[in-house]
Amino acid sequence: MKKLALVSMIGLVLAGCGGGGSDDNGGQTQPQPKAVMGTIESVQSNNIWVNGDKYTVSSVGYGNLNDVMAPTALAPNMMVKLVEHARAGVEVQLEPTMIGMASEVSGNNFKVNGVALTFNGLKGIENGDWVLVSSLPTATEGYKVLSVVKIEADKFDNTVEIEGPVSNLDENTTTFKLGAALTVNYNTAKMDLDSALANDLWVEVTGKMNGATNELDATEVEADDYDDLGNEAEVEGIITAVNHSESYFEVNYRGRFNFDHSTEVELANDRDGSIADIKLGLQVEVESVLRNGQRFATDVEFDNYAGNQWQTFEQEGQAAEGTEAGSFKLNGMTIFTDSKTRYEDGLTFDSLTQVGLIEVDGVVINGKKVAREIERED
Image (cartoon, rainbow, N blue to C red):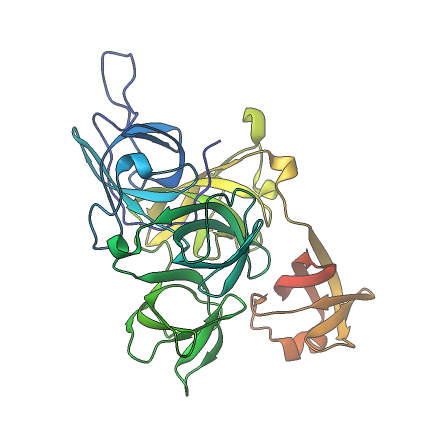
């Protein structure tokens, strides 16, 4: 199983040397996915391995910046995308979850841009160091850190970056929060969104930290999704929503993948699976194609299927009034809602007790059952 990634990228076709696609059958080149994305598995000199394939690196860039670090400075578990392919090698574009200054470093705990993080491999990082952080999403609004790499801030134009879901949006003050602590001021930011800015929208924000307010003054707010993937693509990450009745699931809170009878499912150890095995919280690799403007999963592969699942639950029944704010009762069980709860079939929180039977899929967070999707029961 290939390494996981929390990135989005434009589609491209990789072929020829350096892409790890050549075999011993007449020297022909096997086809590569049109969108190649992943975390670095290993680094040897100017060569890196991403998603099981070897690539020779010609340069390393970030956004519009070129040559921000030497290929030999790349490290395992850094999130990357491959933006060019030629005999001379690939250009690697870094796709971190965060860029910023480390602070309050203590053991495995630290902060970047005011957001509290934990990483067991936090060695050689000191207060004041600028770092790249790569991570995976969690059931909460936290981050599961994969790697922390020290950088030269001036090579990155002293630019701060952070990804995550929008919360506490206040259009009057033109602010919102990312994570639990960071306030983003988007008053003068360029907005690169397909829809209006809203709570729960996953965005990538770049800008500068304001020392006077301890806020991030955004220069750009961009919707971070998979809409610009090529006709064929491969995405890896965490299943963050699934709706079997409507035949779709979501990866990394960002992109929806439809599935049908033609979707192949593979469990660990090359065991065949089924659509029923697509469950919330599993680590997954998805190969997909565009059909009539919608993205369909052609192949879904899990790694270590039995052990990588969030603690989840499913309940069906008639909802009753809850005893705590944002909660309701179902079969005597207290179920909470939060900013990531999805309401299907025209449901709202206020209508749950009035519509008859409902079906709830959710996760357990700090001992509480929290709904991730609520729909009418057929």
